[in-house]
Each structure stands twice: as C-alpha cells, then as structure tokens.
Length: 221
Image (cartoon, rainbow, N blue to C red; front, side, top):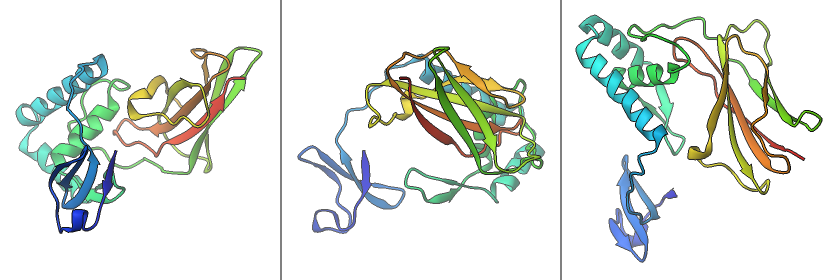
C-alpha cells in the first residue's frame, strides 16, 4: 500500500524508515508506505512475463529497422497512459512497442514490428456474469452500447473463489480464462458453488489496442 503525502514528518521531503513506515520519493512525489522486504517467488506467470519482455526488448534492438523504431517513437509522442495514482504520463516508442506486443501475446501470432493504428472503435462496453445453478456454470456475456463496432476479440478473466462479497481481488489473483475471436459469450465451468467471484472483460485488436476493463461480481448460490 502506498499513499501520497504532503509535508511528511513536518518536512518538505522525508526519506527513510520510521516505526515500520517508509517515506520516499516516487516520480517527484512524496509518498509513504509500509516497509517491506523484496521477494522473488519466481512464479510461472512472472517467468513468462519476463521472457516476453526480454524477447521483445532484444527484437527492438536487433531486428527492428531505424525507420520502424522512428515510427513507434512518433506514435508514442501522442500517447499518454495512467500511472498508479491515476495521472496520465507520456511514454516512449520502446515502451509502447513492448506494451502492444505483450498485450497481443498469446492471442495473436507473429510480431507487431510496425505500429498499426485505425479501425479501433472505442465504446462503452460491459460484461454481465450470470450464475446458472441448473448447469453449475457462470454465463459471461460481452455487450456494447454502440452497434457496428469492429473489435476483433474479447478477453474474459476471473478472480476467486472468495468467501464474502467484501473481498476485492488483488492483481495477482486475476486469471485469464478465455479469449474469443470474434467476441462472443462464454460459459465458465471452473467455479465452486456457494462462493463469490469477480469477472472482468475487455475488447482487443490485433494492433495491441484494448478497451477499458469492465468488472462484475457474481455469487454462485
């Protein structure tokens, strides 16, 4: 847990640990969080993500031409993404290249070496999860408010089971359960009755562009 603070410890910018609390600077801000000791559990998800980053990072430096890198840098000049505090910040061509390619894998094959823009139509989308006790499954349906949108596919993710509706999932607890091309509904049989689950979905394109997440909580009882 991390929080932005003003005038920490009656100073302009405190730094260090005090009684289990760590004061530091993050992107020009004074922040405070619980002290912690870094760990590296080396889970399969972590190792897979690191392998992707290494793969695309090497490709950026050894395979992409100067013209291709320049195209990514030019596109990135017009891009901003939210940080952990919700503020939008600029990105680099290299970071945008990694972001788009990592998002595409493993749903699309090949590499996105040249940025592809256009055709992505953003809309207010939402996912409805419905517990179907007769089939012991959750029905996931992806809807869009505006018709004629040309998304290529959609992702469904699940978090749970949880014992109570008050339990919110952490980032590590989300697991992708399906990907549909073209976007269609899904039946989730990998659940336990009598529990609470979170679901989320988003639309995707082969360009690595994705829509915003829509989250839905559903009890299986």
